[in-house]
Length: 357
Image (tube, rainbow, N blue to C red; front, side, top):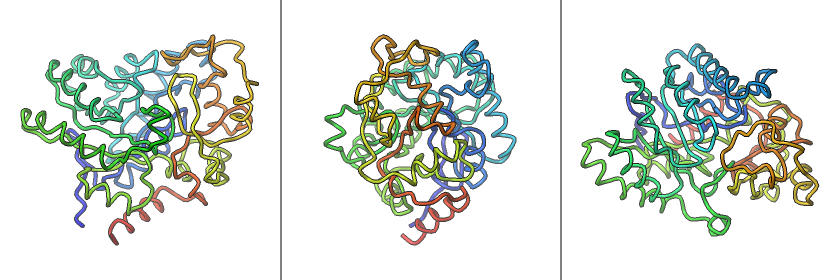
């Protein structure tokens, strides 16, 4: 099959592969730039990025903003010819500040989910010369329709959508009941493309849909392209790479995991998530984890009075290799990983399999 380049807004890459943004601190400039150098789109995760500074607890919002700009600049410097994106969750308490910071840094693409990013075009209007593409992350055709209608009133057509299915890792845009039924991503893709048709016709431009969740091999990529996706977003597979910005113990969790270790959890932010079961999560299930206080107040929907633990602190600990005090989010296929390789080796493998198909 003919594999076309992936074009999002004014930006184009040779390979239709986006590395999903993984917070906290799992995908920073190191991983993002490596993917971009290999012809894909590398993505820096904005959530809690200020933890890289020792004074994070004192000046959280300022630290997040400054570290986001720094990591974008580093990624662009390490991959000057590549395309660099940033993932900024709508649920962040400093969402708009982080979006403005990304626009000031002239990042190529902003990916935004964990809520409907209805204000993104308005924020971009503050930067009239900006070439940054705006790509919402959604889990349903209905969300695509709502965003298109709202953005139309703001005079903006989405530069694309990432359609995240039920096999993704991290926080998920489905109820636990829906996840148990596991709606087919291909059906969601077809319906989303149908919903977008009138908006594309009116605007006279295509709105590319990128599929995420459960994409593991070149064969998986080929299947999604055959069904009309313009590209795929992959996160889990990029964890077990040398360039991934997380601690080696974090990466080894994916190698350690068996199929039965990939479980659904109820996150303090009010959404279900998929993660690798470990002693920390088992302790949470037994009711042993109680936060002393909320050190960061990073997520709008998190209630520290009822939350069993601080998710930011848990994810920071995990990124640093302290898995006894945290856990790793992971996609449904994480148990299939058995070794750590370079980003180049992974991309070569995916492209080779894709070409064979």
